[in-house]
Amino acid sequence: MPKVLLIDDEQFHRAALKDKFESNGFDVVLAENGKLGVETAVAEKPDLIVLDILMPVQNGKVTLRDLKDLPETKDIPVIILTAVPESALQEESDRAVFSLALEVIQKDQIEMDGVVEKVKTYLKL
Image (cartoon, rainbow, N blue to C red; front, top):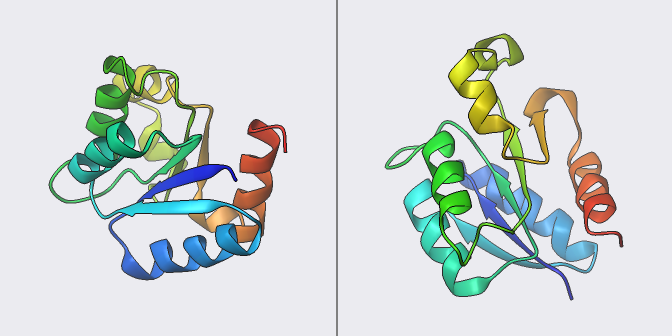
């Protein structure tokens, strides 16, 4: 069973995505901030990570850099799922960080089923 790590500070969003992934045959682990997300990724070795950007403790940009810097997690694919407007993600430094992810998806532009389908595609399921 493929394992997905959801890193998002919004409890409702984590729970809704968890239900959607589990109903599609995924094992799901959760983290409520970036720091816990990195720790969870190292411990759980998920097949793919869905990462939010705006979070307390450690934001998604720092989390993504940390994940790609660690030997244990550098090869785990990451999809960024964020409510940050696309126009706010266009700074040169942001583009460099976000290029480490498979894709940046706007939360308001895709349904949860769409996120699950993207993950299936990336994991070739």
